Image 1 (cartoon, helix red, strand yellow):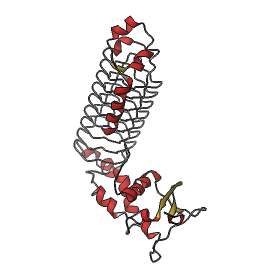
Image 2: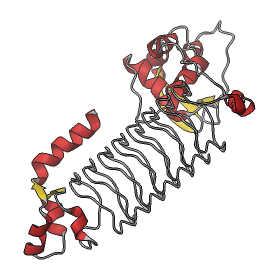
Image 3: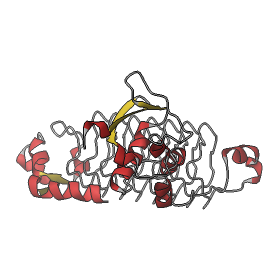
Image 4: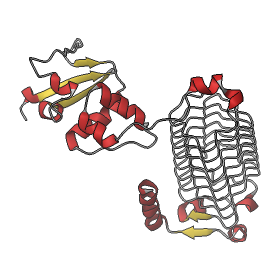
Length: 327
């Protein structure tokens, strides 16, 4: 297209360049109205002449790509309701149809605060996207609840029961989860940054691409959990149990791994200080790449005693990366 067909948009301080045909793809949208002289809608421009919108640029990118391709593609951990909010603001009807109706929660934050004495359990309830930060849920039961994208940051949830919940993209930053039961749950792309998870139970849970940076997981149980691509850097993992976990490409940089158990775990591509292992017996029967194996600063005989499964770097890691993304 010629230069006259290009349009610049300033969305939340980020500049987007696109074409008029792209913005006209949904003729009923606010973006199409920018070029309709009869439209009552008018947009402010910044000093460079770009159309100015005070909206979230990360979610606007999803809308713009949808107008370009006609396909909805969401990044991992992206809040679907937030995308819907932007689609409603810009009046992109085709995208709203693609997203479907907004899911309705069983309770609101206000109802939870004002009726706590009458709420016997949160088990099985739909609480998607709710802001429940800073509330107290000690010993509460959330088993099988839908907690997708809910915000529990700074909440007190010691000894709470969250087994079998779906908490994809949920936020538990600086949340107190000591001795909480989180087993067989879905926490894909969830954020546990700085959380207190001492002696928490996460056995067989799905924590792919979860963020546990600086979390205190002392004595936590992760056996058989899936943590592909998770970030556990700077976390405290003293005496944590990772037996038979899927730990491919997990970032353990500067984590405290003293007395942690990795027996039978898949550690291919994991970021560890392989040159200075402590308590090597706890890595027996683990799966590592040839490159990782070569970095272990031990004698050949000592390495053999670990009974590690060593796989070829090139062949296996390529398939691992593809598998991690497809899942």
